[in-house]
Image (cartoon, rainbow over all chains, first blue to last red; front, side):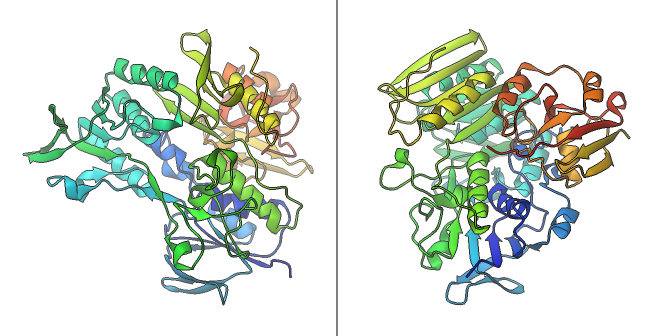
Length: 401
Length: 108
């Protein structure tokens, strides 16, 4: 039986892409996009970039205007929380609205910021900690940073460092606490982490590595954060300590989960009538060995969305196998990453100018990935090379430059 | 406000007023023009807002940056001499009346 009714939970990049692609492919079944947020579906990357900096409004981050959904017959069930999935009846149960029935359901539920363990930090109330994941977070953080002077960021990952960059640019005093020995963890190679560390330091950001906030005190109008060595005053505290996949609905419905919803190479869950895509999905990948991988990126969300849309539209689709890529922008430097570089044993650095270079990461002779700073041409080339080497079990020739 | 015309591969045309300073990519998205993805949010990082500028309008535009030039190597549809990334093109009085043609495909 062909699929005539598709429901999608989650209106981020993954969920939106499924809807838009299905209609582009001419699929004319019934389509419902569900999200607990009342806003029109919006893009998240600008929240830590142009929207946070005040250069763009939230409306600029909407994927499309409301009329687009009407014109393309995309039903919006916004502002309704999903309370459960009835797999036997193929129905999504919503808070405050009749259930949405489906022939195929797509879980694009994303992830949420990992909460700081506040029980270990008496003195730091939940109202004092900002996260950055939703539009509400973005608006709140923009206002708090504007009103404050001293911004303390817990977590030196992409989000924390993008906020640090923006706050420093706005003239704030910024301190970053990072528990690891370097910034951006396993997401980037050591040379790239060190370059960005220097960049933040040069911009006046105080970066504290191997450092954990161990106690917090409220002193009159500010918070004092201690890391065991000294204390730092903060008007605004931002936590960027990773995310947790929203896989509870799937688990509750009896689908396999393992730090994410487990899917096969066609992105199907253990129920063939349900797919999972984007940040919430754990999918097969050579880098993940037995347990697969879960990625948090726009590229991954969009490519997953296109894959599932093509399958649902009845197109022949080979197993999902796309070279992952990511980007971040800090202090006006663009970092573009192609491939997954964790576990590399050797790097080659190719400089064209002091602030333009690429780090090629290898395991033996195999290129795992490439990190390019202000070098989009290297990035584009590396993506092509990594794509060409897919499925060959590695052994791609070293990059010639 | 400057007018911008978007032409689909099948010849369908739509013309909109786009606020000065807004990119042609954002302008297309906010009017729901099909065929422009703009997945990176307008940072010349993803090459999914590729357009072919009408030949008559090509000279109206500022020259492209190195970044744009490099990302245009990564487009899903063939790069042509008239190829630009619409996130890097701003609506302005200088380009009032510009016509851009959408490619067949945006995503690789």
